[in-house]
Image 1 (cartoon, rainbow, N blue to C red):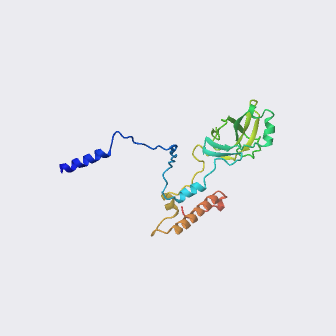
Image 2: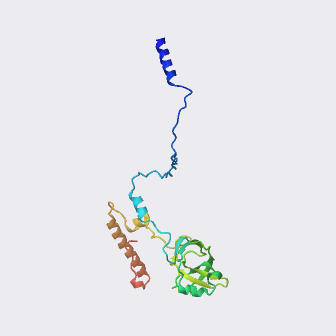
Length: 244
């Protein structure tokens, strides 16, 4: 076994001579190394596998717009002393308003609300009982308005006002009426007491049905009213009330 190993080693030593030069062939042109740039990886949201309900479909199809492109003001009642107004001003202001503002335009005017008390009148823009002017911010599109008196009718005008108090109206609102601040003056029907029912409808035997009670009460009340009326006339026209 040892002799076999020695023979293999001698054979390898004879085949490889360290003094011999080893020729290495290098190509004249070295190919360029291509640098592959990493592609941008777009990571999106996880897909929504939730089944859409009918409400989701309606919300996507019937979403209310932020604006309607028209100049309008709407008035609503909150309580006896407060009303609420919201409005929109379109980009194209009517020529009549532009002419009323004058050559300097909006530079000398500011946005304002004018609230009128129009209780029991046909408002024509100048015949209100009383009005107040309220300055509002340029970016505002709604306002809570305090009114002094309850149970009154009010309407509002949206427009521009200058330092001299000249008001240029853009739009007029609907008319609203605030409720009362106290108990209503309307009194409910007074119901008959048990003693009054027994007076006009004495029960001798059994309990009559509702139509019978109503008929007897109406008849007796009619006779009582007639007796009182006859008692106010001459003495010969008086007659006694058989139910007293």
